[in-house]
Length: 336
Ligand code: KDG
Image 1 (cartoon, rainbow, N blue to C red):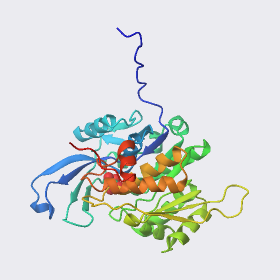
Image 2 (cartoon, protein in one colour):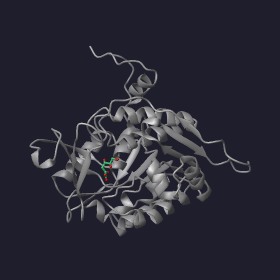
Image 3 (cartoon, helix red, strand yellow):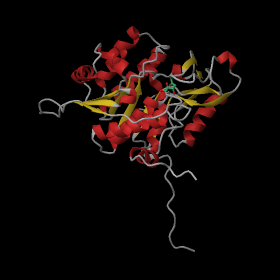
Image 4 (cartoon, rainbow, N blue to C red):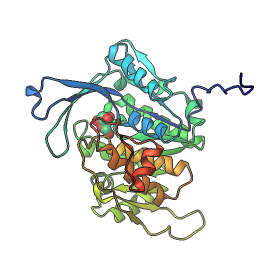
């Protein structure tokens, strides 16, 4: 017998990132076309923040996610799936009085899927500031927020703002992906709330249309400049297949920050674009937390976003470290 003992794995690991938001069951159609003609669906998990959590874990960053799930089978499924993906769900709560949200995708042969939400009054929409564990947020290096959660209800909005307040008071970085969902709120409802969160965030990661929604500027450089002037430290504007533009504030005591830089994207043949932004966010944050420059973090984020579009599902195609490095190096996986 070997004299060397194996070391037990400490579980759950201390989260370096904490995030909160609604996770749902998604029903992915087995065929393209209007839902009334679809007979078979494949159930999976969805939720922008839990997608990011899974993406980060795959890249070696321990994450804690919390929310409310219904006291139903789908709530159990959400928690079991996230546990299986090694996300810490120890702070998640079960709400026996409300259901877990559900959404359906509708696929076309090309172009972005349509989505249909069945989430009004869901357990997650009843998230409240009392559900926050301040010490849990304070002990993380980064709190990740999206613009979906404050769109769900007043109590969700207050919860997000309180979580940001706790993070800022304890030196936990805040990242914000606006993730504007037109089916949840209008641009006029979203704008002031998102601007408030963006102002308090260290890292802001809008898409091009979201950058315009937040600032009124169509040009990403102008939009990024406005977000930096409002308080953000680092802005990365997602440009889809064209890549991303990175702009950073000047370090304290120095004049202007470095000139914004565009980081080219990677070619991909998308089968499902939903979740690509979350893969981008996960890989960008993993890069920053691992000490990469913003440009290198954006480069790996572009690669992760491209890879995520090649698989049906909101998170299933998110790469681990090995797959990401191989893709960026242009090396094929050995498949047989
Ligand atoms: O970014 C992908 C998410 O949009 C998806 O997983 C579901 O969270 C979701 C939402 O609210 O649309």
